[in-house]
Structure formats: structure tokens, C-alpha cells
Picture 1 (cartoon, rainbow, N blue to C red):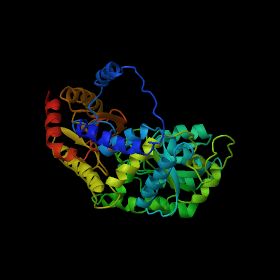
Picture 2 (picture 1 turned 120 degrees about the vertical axis):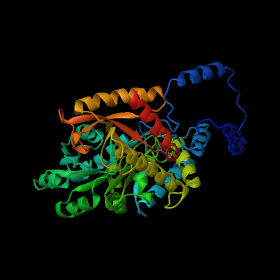
Picture 3 (picture 1 turned 60 degrees about the horizontal axis):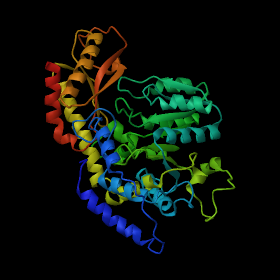
Picture 4 (picture 1 turned 135 degrees about the horizontal axis):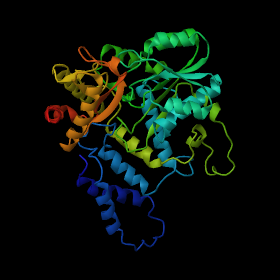
Length: 443
């Protein structure tokens, strides 16, 4: 729930505890500016948003942060720590290390190197940068459904990028990859553990076997799907992939997606701590009060918000990253909601279904005589549903992803409807989502 009056009382109580740690300091005069009018104006401006916090918002990968994350973040912001060095954030740096270690433990790593960063893009940049430093300028390969950031970041790093075709389930086609690996030009392969468009999970077990034969570096982009390592209701293929994710060389996961955190909070992890040598640098002006290892020595970013670490630490204290726990059950509800919506679509002749969801993303299209006509109807239904407060998304996907019997394939891709059911409460709202969707389609 976005609006919780209880937050104010708990925030004030926590501020009193925090203030007690600095009671020996002299008072400073408060700023006399009246900010009430400006805050009210900002609140009015913020009404010009989609209701990202509500279950009827099922469009993009937007999930409200947990209230404990909001409160802890706000509490830390009264100090505004900087986790680049211990000088700027002793407590929040320690909390970051603890929180990141808990994420690493979720993947089975008792030793690791890692830290928080601004989001998946920065985290993937660090992982690919380390890979380049260790493997040279050989190409980076990822599936054609991988996030576009890998192609862009390869350009930033000055290494070639190769897009590997996908199968009809949106997963990397390993035969196509192997044909390229045999030529010896690929140094790093990105395995996507939950694609942005469809939530498809690349076949990690086979990629691990190929790594043994060809010796490339294997990086898991689990920015969206990483937390599903804890879910117990995945299908066989996805479960097998997540079971072995701890065998990759590096992992990216975004706590600001399924981890219930405010933006921006990404995380990059390396299985072998010795990659820290890649980060080695000597700064003459930022570290004076401590000789301990600080997070700035293992990060490409310099200044980073300590408040993000405090919020993540607090959330994982309340909701431990363990199978069968409350956090994991929330993921399972999201996946169950996707399965139920997909089942309704598949059984209804008004719709064209795609493959079953592997995580919590559903894609489908309205039935029509041709792909072009179905694409046009998708856009109209998208707008019609929004007028009814149901907010979906549009995606442009290969026609091979859909059951198109009797549909004229007059273009290679189809504009389809896409729903990201990443809020646990979506499971209780499937019936209403379905009713609004069908009403929008009829009109």
C-alpha cells in the first residue's frame, strides 16, 4: 500500500533513536524557509504518474518498495552517508557488506566479491569490464532477447558484441552459440535469467557444459529474475537453471526490482574474490580515517548512496532471503498469478497465446486475420484498458513466439500485450484484471 499513516509515527520514533547517538553535539539553527507550499506543489505534480503501486498497474517492471525500505532509506537520508569510503559511511558500508553477503549466500556463495550500484546497467558494465580485463577484447555474446544494455556496454568497452538467435520460447539457441564458439572469437557469454520482454530463462545447464569445452567466461544477467532462485513453483527447465546459477563467474541482480527496494539499487557479484585485483587503484585524497578495505576499492562508481544499503539491510532483516519464507512466498504468488492469467488467455478464442510464462511475465495478442491486424488491435486494447485503469505494456516480439494457426504472417514481428505481474497481490486481482481486459477488447 502506498499511503500508510503509520509510517509517520514510526519514522519519528526512529529519528529519536538516531538523534540520541549525536546528543553531545551543539544544536544548529533550523532553516526558517517554509517548504510546505513547495511540498504540496510537488505532491500535485507527482499525481501526473501511472499508479505504479496499485495491482491494476501491470505494465512495466515497477514494484513499490517495502515500507521498511522506505522508512530505513528516509532515516539514513537524514545523515546522507556516502558508501564510497568508510570516511563517508562507516555504518552504512558495514550494512552494505552484510546485505550483499546475504544475496551472495542465496546463490550458494560463501566467499565472493561484490557491492551495490546504481542499477543493472552499471552492474552489468562492471561485470563485462572485469571480463574484458581477464579475457581480452574477445566478443561478448548474449541472446537476441537479452537486454539491449549488453550490446551498448560492449561498445563502451570497445569489444565486439554478437546477438545469438533465440528458440521459440525466447531462450538462447545453444546450437547457434556453439557454432560461433567453435570459431574461438567469443570470450564472454551472458546467460539471461529472466528476459525483459518475456521473462524467459536461458538454458544454463547446457551453457555450463559448453563453458567446460570452450573456456569462455559466463556472466548471469539475473537483474530481473535472480530472486526466483528462492521460488518453489518454477517449471522444470527454469528450476534446473536457477539450481546451478552459483556455478557462473559473475551475477547481476536488481534489488530495486523484486527485492522491494527504491530505485536505484543494483548489485554485482563475482564468485572469485581475486578479481578484485582488476579494481586496484591508489587515491591520494579520499581515505584518511581507516585502513580497512572500503567499498570504493572494489567499485567502478565512486560516490554511492549509503541510504540504499540501509534500506536493503533493513528489508532483509525483516524478510530473510530463504526458501519457504514470506519473501519467497511473494515471488511464488507473482508466478502463480502469471500462470492463471496465461491459462485464461490460452482457453479463450479471442486471444493468441504465447508460450507459458517461466517467471511472472505474460505476453499475448488479440486474435485477428493477420499479424498486422493483431498488432493494430493490441495497440487499441492497450489504450482502452488504460482508460479503465488497467495499465499493461506493449512489446514487439517475433511471430515464432506465438501460436498463429490460421493467422496470416505478413510481418516478422507482432505488437503484443505484455503484463508484468510482479506484485504478490496480483494473484488476488487476476479476476478483475481479466474482466477489464475482456471489456477493453470487446469495445
